[in-house]
Structures are given as structure tokens and as C-alpha cells.
Image (cartoon, rainbow, N blue to C red; front, side, top):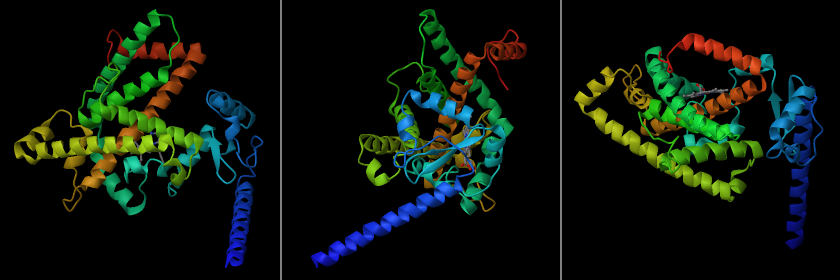
Length: 345
Ligand code: HEM
């Protein structure tokens, strides 16, 4: 029996090695038209892209390989970094099934919301959520965002007098989180100025960091990730975030169940995202289930704040490198604002 087990074990390992080798060969072939930096057979490029060096390394590869280049995250996990606008446009215009790999990292948090859905259910949610993007709804958010930006700029004004360099990303993240909390839940958190802000803000902030860290380090297998300190932190933060989202939904549902309140909310000058989600119905008068509601709220919290924070931080970084464009932007903004220090739509 022992001999047989050893033989079977060896056969199993050999089959795995062959499978692994063939998979790798197929992937290398698929990417051969894209030249890229030399890779280690096991680590790929992971050992070259660490911590502070990441941005500089990626930028220098982008200069060397001007449209796109493969970035290997391990022996059988390549990604393609696309940095030419025309290439990006082509990819973003595709309606193919969404890639499973990065999204599966966020599903325990955001569930089956628009970002990860596809097919009929995606279409159904997309239709139900259309009212959330009417101009009449979005317009009222501009003043809320402008208020959040002002808080951030006031903070920077103070820091500026100390003549020290500052790390902008955290402040920008808190600003976008503050904005989405106001737009999504009509919830003022003071998270930009109170360092010990409430547990939900901390959970969302931690979750966004942990997700982007997992994408960058490609801790791919749940079975390994869940055992790490970061994996445990991720699941704890998910629980906190869900507790909060469920509570907010429950309370708002109760409020809307009173006809008088419902009428008042529908006449409000601005309905927040949660009002809209709770009021939306399909042609048969059916709205979103509780589970779907939570998924959409959590999806928008994630998709709406981390992306914008990264985009704005990147823009500020680029403007700092190019003072001539900075000046052109300043003139354009001053031309629009005139004497005002805020913007409405
Ligand atoms: C600069 C900011 C943003 C960037 C760069 C960005 C980028 C993207 C990209 C590339 C996708 C497509 C993902 C895919 O199909 O695999 C996407 C989808 C999505 N984004 Fe954004 N996004 C930004 C801001 C926002 C904001 C502010 C929100 C919400 C408040 C949001 C909510 C969503 C949702 C719900 C989806 C899924 C849409 C669907 O499949 O129907 N995003 N975003």
C-alpha cells in the first residue's frame, strides 16, 4: 500500500509539473508579441517592484516599452500593463466578461454588485440604478463635494505654513470618502479632521488599502491569504463594514415605510444614493433584495472613493512636475470661479 501511495504521489506531482509547464508555455506564447522587462522564472517581476521603488520602476519600463508590457506576478500569473491611451481606450471599450482575478479579492466585501456582476443580473441592476445617475441627482452632489474639498484645502493651508512636504494620498482618500459618505448616505463624518473617526470610515479605509495591497502583491490564493495577518484584518473589517451598511439600510427602510416620510424624501431637493436604491423598482414593481442593496452600497463605497482618490493624487503629482500646465489649469479655474470660492451645478 505504501509503495502504491508513493507511486501515485509521484505521478500526481509529475502531472502537476507537466500541467504547470504547459500553462506557463501557453501564457508566454500569448504574450510574446509584447516585449517586456526580463523576468525571474519563479517571482516574475515581483522582486523588482517593491515599496518605494514601484512607481519609478513601472515608469522606467513604460518609457522603454511605449504601449504596453507584461508584468509577471509569479510563474503562471502574468498581467499586461497598458499605458498608451489608445490601447487603454480599446480595452475599456470591450464588453467581454470581466476578469475574475482582481475582483474576486473584493467580493467578500462588496458582494455581487455592479462591478462584479455580468450577464442578465448585471443588466437588471444597471437598469434599476439608472435613476441614480440622472443629472438632477448628480448636480446636487457637486456642492457637497466642493465642501469636502474645502476642508482638505484648509488642512493643506495649515500644513503649508510649516513648510514641510506632505503625503497627499491619505488626505485625498479621506476627502473622497467624506464626499461619498455625504452623497451616498447623507452622512457627515468629519473623517477629514477627526483622526479617530467612526468605525465604518476606518473599516472602508482599511479595506481599500488591503484590497489594493493584495492586488499589488498578488496574494492570490484565499487559502493562504486568509491565514495571514492582513487576511484576518480584511475579514474583520468586512464584518464591521457589513454591520454598518445593514444598519443604515434597515434604519432608512423604516423611515421610508412611513408614507409621509416617503413623500417628503421623494420631494427632497436631493435624494441620496440610498434613497434612490430603496425607491427604485423594475417594470413589475420589484426592487432590489436586501442582499443586493447592501452589495450596491458597498460597491459604490469602494468603486467611488479609491479610484477618485488615486486619480486626483496622480493628477496633483503630474501637475507638480509640470508647472506650466499647473498655471493653465489655475487660470481656467479662476476664469470659471471669478470671486467665488466654491462651485455649484
Ligand atoms: C477616476 C475615477 C474612476 C475610475 C478611474 C474608474 C474606473 C472604472 C473602470 C475601469 C471600470 C470598469 C471595470 C470593469 O469593467 O472591469 C469601472 C466600473 C465601475 N465604476 Fe468606476 N471609476 C471611477 C470612479 C467611479 C465612481 C466615482 C463610482 C461611483 C460613485 C464608480 C463606480 C463604478 C461602478 C459601479 C462600476 C461597474 C459598472 C458596471 O459594470 O456597470 N466609479 N470604473
